[in-house]
Length: 328
Image (cartoon, rainbow, N blue to C red; front, side):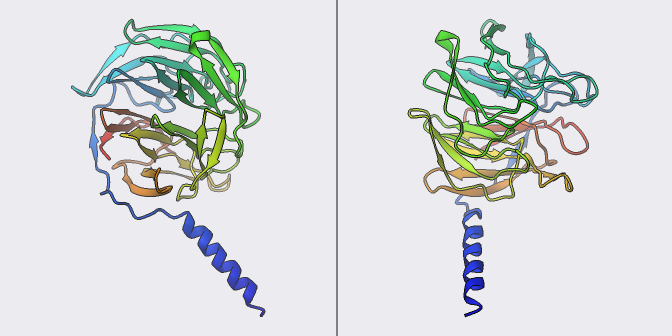
């Protein structure tokens, strides 16, 4: 009788751990193709977006650790080259957000850096980019200071932003921006733990959110339902948690890659090079392979014509200057 409870406890623990393991993948290991990086010496904590089959990358910082960048570059996958475009007109920054709605990009928020140290402050300005005219227009500021390292996505002609940091606390706030009215509307707070440095990803039918950081790296994974502003918790990721990762939707399929696991100030954690796929129908995760390069966080990612692209970022020693594509 003395062993009944310990055995039951160990069995339950085994079940709980097993439930969070990756499932056997029905797909082969992903292979990556090296692409041409943009001119320069690399960058981290930038943003990327796609309009009319071309990608745009702006903001972030470079390896010189000078003040933040404001240049903007267009990537054409057809000839694997980069063209310089009109620079971002606001303050240079890191950990901003960017999303596209009706072939128009919206970029902003984030964190202002000063030369030599992270001693700046959160930014709430919000800008619209017109790719056809290569021009920027300032829109209404986000009415919240929880604007550092937010997630963003679009639904039904609106832009959603949330789960940021205001230099004092991690937030559960979410906001909806209505472009036709140039107006922000407060939504219900996220139902899980407050955090920043998470990911959000939409395939046009489902919206997913998870990972991130508050005091340690998170593993949880959620679906958001904008019709009734509600959340549903799904299968957690099969790892020890990550922050500053990237996410992609490719042909309706969902991927999360790279980032940093932070287990506390005594370890500092470790950067990741892996790519995971979330199977929506089965509510399971697959391990799909690794970038054939260094582990990293604060990378960029985007999707064009059924291909995923991941690149740049930083690790414990340097800012990276490489760029990769893959097909799932």
